[in-house]
Amino acid sequence: MGREVLDIAGRALRVGVTTDEIDRVVHEACMEREVYPSPLNYYNFPKSVCTSVNEVICHGIPDYREVQDGDIVNIDVTVYNRRGFHGDLNETFTVGNVDPEGRKLVETSFNCLQAAANLIKPGTLYRDLGTAIHKVAQKNGCSVVRTYCGHGIGTLFHTAPNVPHYHKNKAKGIMKPGHVFTVEPMINLGNSGDTTWGDNWTAVTTDGKRSAQFEHTFLVTETGYDILTMRDNEPVMTWNPDLSQR
Image (tube, rainbow, N blue to C red; front, side, top):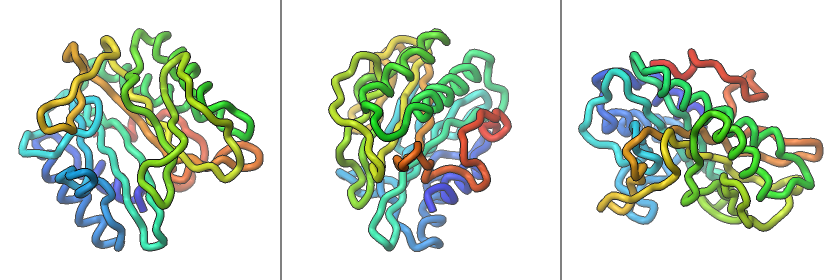
């Protein structure tokens, strides 16, 4: 269901739309599918979806700002279904005429997630994902946000394990079949620093440069992994810029 809701939100994104309108679209899509938008009222978060534009790293609160030509916009959807489980995913979209540096950032953030996914299988140390992400980011002149991490998910929105995205982290745990968790590296064009606005939610880069992110919910299987939030007929992550262009 989360996949369906994100796809609907992505189709609504365009130059001139407000992020508040994206929130309305997400909320209505959730109600139509009889799922609850997990962010709504989560520690007083006031909206049904997170929308993070340009220098906003994550947890952006939808408002009346209109999306501009050249923006990059992350839409982060989590839904809670009637069986009692959460599903969490996000994508960063390029809106209109995004400059080459912005497009490279978005592709790099996708490739960072893909590099981490390639390691998911029984026996992998959770801390090793951060090294794979770091290598891709560094190769492309980007940095990895250290403050926020992936997480276990299921009947709880956020639970163990913690899945840091940066090099030389000290995460505990080894992957086993049946483990379900998110990986969601936040990749910055500038330094890795972040700060939080007075709303206690919106995290932005300290240098004002842009940030991008992709996220999936993964299930560890006996031989590797399944992506629980993947598009239909797309079992393996493959970069396609047309899917992100608006």
